[in-house]
Structure formats: structure tokens, C-alpha cells
Image 1 (tube, rainbow, N blue to C red):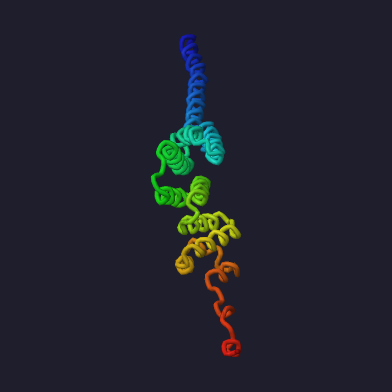
Image 2: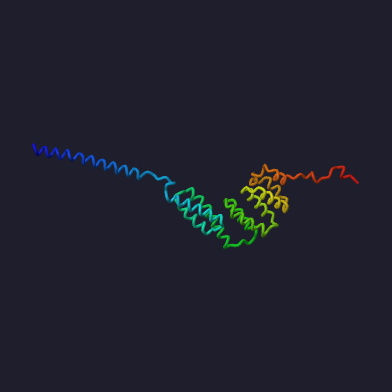
Length: 216
């Protein structure tokens, strides 16, 4: 009887041990479950670092410090955010082009104009403006230079400057008046009376009235 009682006692003492193991297993499972829960991207310190590098790259790009901007954007491209990586890739291409421009001089104004237009199409308005301004200084008699500057000014919201540049382009080549009428890049100026007057001038004002024509 004592032996059975002892064995029974062992069995009763074994149950808490089993419950303890089960609790430990559940706790471990809970820990693993928590550990397997995906972390939010904004909580990832690598994302925070990528944002900081991206902002630093933009500041350097605006300051025309292309080597520093390139280093920042290269870090973002390899970061955890695909969206930031895509944006950084665009700016990285601009940096590479700007840095290559320092090494390779343009043989003709047409080459620099094409380069400025490519920057404008990529959204690098700072780099495009730098090249267009250089062209207006070095080749001010080329009408397409002023037309390109007018386009850039319109896209960046500098409407008075856009009209002034377009006026210069038309003065050098009146055909630019007809081209601008169908150019979608000037759609933000469509309701501006100054733009309308420039493209559709009132030629009747300079024509004398019939009595004046025959007055002796």
C-alpha cells in the first residue's frame, strides 16, 4: 500500500511538471509568433537611414554637389524601400550626367541644348536651368535656346519669365509663335491674356483706316 501510494504521489507530482512544460512551450510559441510578425517599414531603422540619405542627396543635388549627392543616392538604391530606391535612381542618373558633363565639354550649343532638354524631361529642373542659362549667355542669338528656356520656366511656374523668354524666341524666329500654339508644355499659360496676346497678336492695330490711306 505504501508503495502504491508513493507511486501515486509520483504521478501527482508529475502533472504539475507536465503543465509547466506545456506553459513553457506555449510561451515559446508566443515568442516565436511575435518574432515572426512582420515589422512595419517605418519601424525599420534601415528605412529611417534611407530617408535621411535621400534628403541629404536632394540637398546636395540642389547645391550642385553632384559627387556627394551620388554617394547618398547610391545608399538609398540598396535600401529597403523600393519607392525611395526608384526615386533615387532617377536622381542618380542626373548626378552621373552632370559629373560627366564636367569632364566632357560640349562641342556645339546644339549638344548642350539636347542635354538640357534631357534633364528637363527627367525632372531635373535645376540641372536643366543651369544649362539653359549658360546657353542664353553663350549663344543668345539661337531662337531654340530661348524657346527651351520658356518651356522650362512654364513647367516650373515662372510664368512671367516664360512669356519673356518666349517673346525673345519669337523675335528671333517668328515660326516659334505657331509652334507654341500647339505645344502642350505651355498649357499652364493657356488662360493668361499675355500669352494669348503674344501668340495671337492683333495685326489690325497697325493698319491705317481707309480715310487715312487716301488722305493727301
